[in-house]
Image (cartoon, rainbow, N blue to C red; front, top):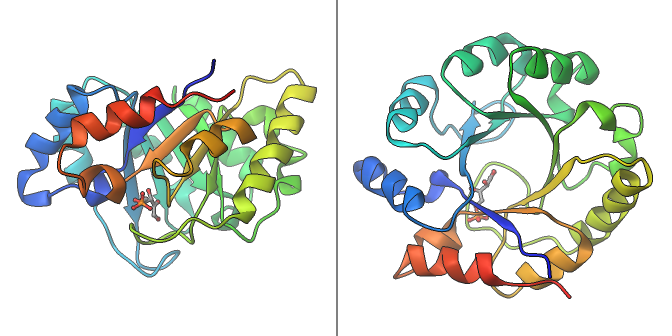
Length: 220
Ligand SMILES: O=C(CO)[C@@H](O)[C@H](O)COP(=O)(O)O
C-alpha cells in the first residue's frame, strides 16, 4: 500500500507564531516543510523571502522544500542553497532556460524541482524530465492558499506517472494546492508521491492529527 509524503505549506501558518508552527510540523508525521516564495510579479501576491527562511532553518531539521513563484529564479539559486534549502523548485513558466536552471540547482547541491501551472501540459517536460528530482503539479493557480482543487490535475498526474515510469526515473510527483482528506486517496491512486497542504492543515483544530490522517491515507 502506498502512502504520501505530506509537506505542510507554511504559507498558511500563523506568522506571529512561526517558530511554534515550524515546531508543530517537526513534531508531526510530515515529511518536509513546504515554503512558498512569491514576488508579486510572477504571482499576484508577496509572501516571504530569505530572512524568514533563514529563521525557519534554525528550527527545522526536516527538509525544506522551497517553491519559488518568482520571475527569473536563476538570480537566487545560489543564495537559496546557502540558506540550507534542500529542494528548490522553479516554475517552468518563469524560466527561459529550464534545463540550465535545473542543472544549476543540482550543481548547488539541492534536489531540483520544476512546477507547472494548471494550464501547462506535462508534455512540456519531455526534454528535461531527467533533470528534475521533483515535479510539482499545481492543483490551483499559484499565489494563494485556500483555493479549490482543479480536477484536470488528476489527468496530468497520470500522464506524468507514465512518463516517469516508462523512463525508469525516480522523479517524485508533488501536488500543491487544494489538497484535503477528500482528494488524498484519488491523488495517490493517480500517482502522486508528495502532497502539499496548507489551509487544510493549519486551519484545522489539531494540525498534528490532521497531518497524521493525511499521511495514513492509502492508495489501493
Ligand atoms: O503554492 C501554493 C499557493 O500558490 C500552495 O503551497 C498553497 O500554500 C497551498 O495552500 P492550500 O491550497 O493547501 O490552502
